[in-house]
Image (cartoon, rainbow, N blue to C red):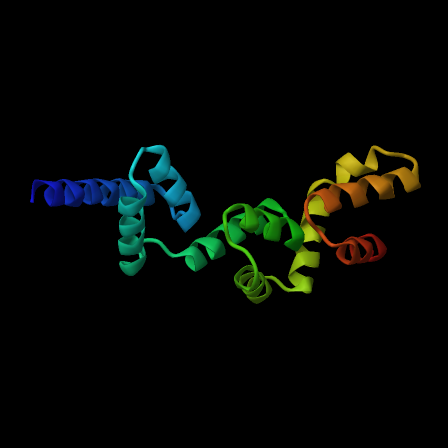
Length: 158
């Protein structure tokens, strides 16, 4: 009986810790599991606590992905970089692609790239050689996860 109470106490402690973690910001399931493991909770207690958080809708990977995706778009990242960042957070496959395709179109990505180009125009204008300037622009946008097609459209449109 005492053992059962101890297990229940450990689960409650894991659940309360999970709640404290989730009050700061939305987390992905994989992040929450990792943080609870770091704090030394047993796998069974983590599993139960995470399941309860999901049941109560305190933990929702799709909602977190949409919030995080919005942050990445505001930071000026392209679809490929967003896909990469969501992958790092533990979201993979069809779910990510559905969320991204519902949230960002090719036109949205191009508009975001234009905003960034306007913001960094001075940086690029310092380069006098037109070919070098175009290469710098291409590398800059490629490193931010924009597709080659989007970058070409951006550089060819006035």
